[in-house]
Length: 465
Picture 1 (cartoon, rainbow, N blue to C red):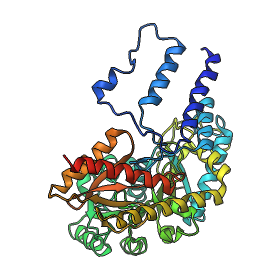
Picture 2 (tube, rainbow, N blue to C red):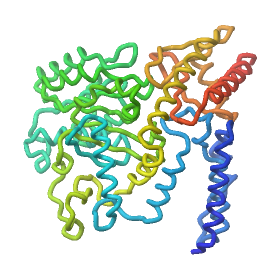
Picture 3 (cartoon, one colour):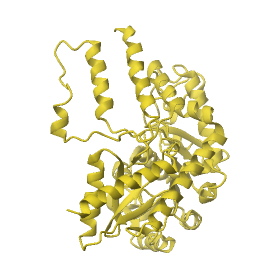
Picture 4 (cartoon, rainbow, N blue to C red):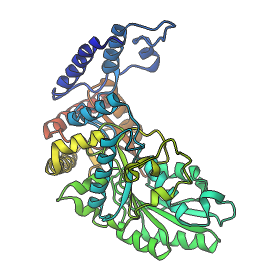
């Protein structure tokens, strides 16, 4: 391998980071799939290519990929650049070891264990446990899997075939991963009951208890309920205290999907939003969202120490797990080969510190408030739901009578294809909405002003057609 090319590679990376300093960095160069396939050399040749061709591809990839670090990227629940975390990501790839034993990754195992303990304490699990997972979806699945196994009945060995039908409960605003979880662990998605939410997207506790009682009357065995903090669309937080009371009353495992909202705990000003998360049996938290660590960085935390290890059947692995058992974290993982994702979180947290992250989370809330203010001040914009945490849902109202859903979806599409800004859309009830959410802590009010300038200009063009 031509290691001298490393300097050229890092020169490309350095240029990319320097462009990130531009206030209005283009989000993307939009092309259709067929157009894009003809712009980049994607052929894999029998005898391969030289390293210069690979560097050319890297340049092309950076040119045509969506720039999630742009200060006009408001499309997903990740974004922004984090240089210390990037260093950690490179370190993980460079060393290329698995996160299963102390023997092959000693410092990584110490760091992961330390970070899990720190995050457990923030949640309120004084003697908790946890592990880095492959995403929030996987964390939610591990939680449901843990709840199923804790039922007893020797489920690990004999399965669920001779048991009553198992029922799990989530809000109708919960992440779709819960359906995948129900399928994966064998209870079936039809036995995942979706509980009605109120106009703000929060689970209605009375509806939860009604469905639990109904399941019992039908001879089923309710075993698990997941609350969300905060939801994908409205960033609503379910009433954790009331759900906890119901879960305890009916002996259900209580999970909180805080993939997004877990990072609120880093702010003294906003951690009150999750003051009851300590009542949960398990929590999913994704630092790749509000802590803007590179994807994937996700943890599953449990109140009960040892639960994750108890999930697993006997590990026939004399070749793998030897000494330093407390640091052989693979013994509580569903994976064997597991990527070391803890280092990038550690390098970032070590750099910013608790106070630095507090400021970053606080700024996200200030930006959300500013967006809400901009919407309310403009007579052509309609706030469809009151902002609860970070998401602002609004739509444009043209002067002439049109199909508002089609108009706003087309407006968002036109803005995306312009390359100037990328924002997402969804539905509030049957109404299409522009779902604006910023998770980049480096975004300023000036960037928001620029976004609305772009947005309103595209709306004006579309309105004139």
